[in-house]
Length: 74
Image (cartoon, rainbow, N blue to C red):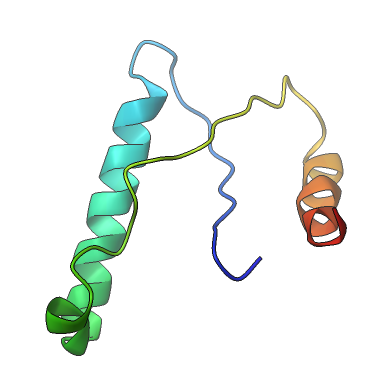
């Protein structure tokens, strides 16, 4: 989809999914602003504060990939 990102990661539940999301968004924002300096002045923020989390419960990776690919059709 053109306006969102799917990411599959494994996280220790005690660490917290929210911390992983925060670190990911911060790191990618810094990288993109370094790589594309014009983003600093044109866009106040690259990410929204919101995110959606769902667990896969040990489903095979191929099943997850297929699910993500089919999101375009839903």
